[in-house]
Image (cartoon, rainbow, N blue to C red; front, side, top):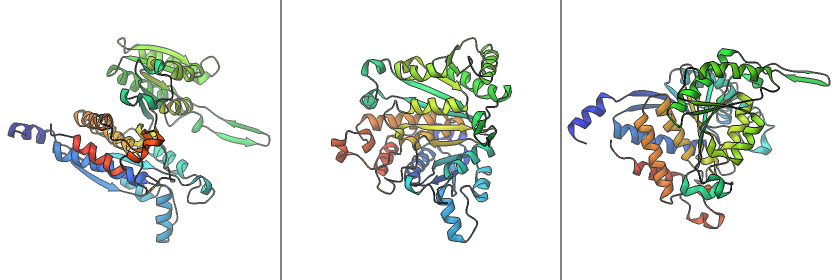
Length: 377
């Protein structure tokens, strides 16, 4: 870079601390590639990232047992590291399906993830779903359905609703309470409209207002918020219809915003569209600290084999730069580098036909390729 470029880069350089919670299964492998990319970004743009590694999930439980401490999926030391950091980069937690009854894995995901969501009020969950044209053959939908392009964002309210309501069993009767306040609804809805302004200016509010009182409140609040964004189109859609339309006409969606349970279901449906969970990043935005993680699981069956797809973890790191550190150019550079690498044919096995998987690149090789694509600004 020219001297003037160096001066500009240094003037805008940031110094941030990131809590790195790699977790279980393929978590440490894919996290290593995301950190590799972030270090490359810091080198090219003059930023300083300090990575504070901490245990979570089954890894935290095992470490505590080995040290003779009380086991926990979310130790106090890990929470402290998160509190002292500017963002949380999360990997994955959980163990083999046939070992879920063991203390190390029982309620592992619930304790770790819900614990973090509650502690940091991670109310807005963002899950983008984009089908790369050159990987469109991986999408399970018919070519004529995806020909218009698929690039949607699901904004899910994450700390309210039925998951956090009262759960009770009385003999042969059981109930789970869905509870929302107007303020709890306003936060994700407002974010959805802000996000839509930077995209294609359309928000779809998904609910079940023909049945649920909470959904009627969602509509009232959404209409109030929509009035502040006259440049953004708003539509209301019942959740059952939304589930159908994500399959029948996904290109019609830009930003979807909805409550916790509906968002859980719809974002999982949307995650199928790109063809692999290995391409799906996510962000959970809180009041002060945000968390970023791949949408997929810990995949213990392939852990340690060097075949896991690190793209979702790398793209989660890009979302961290955008939403926590306001480094849009750097986030876009990572996303462009990932797209260039995938377009070039450097793919992990999950993105290839079974017969061609002997040509797949390794987890670390894909991370190296993304770093090689990154250039000085």
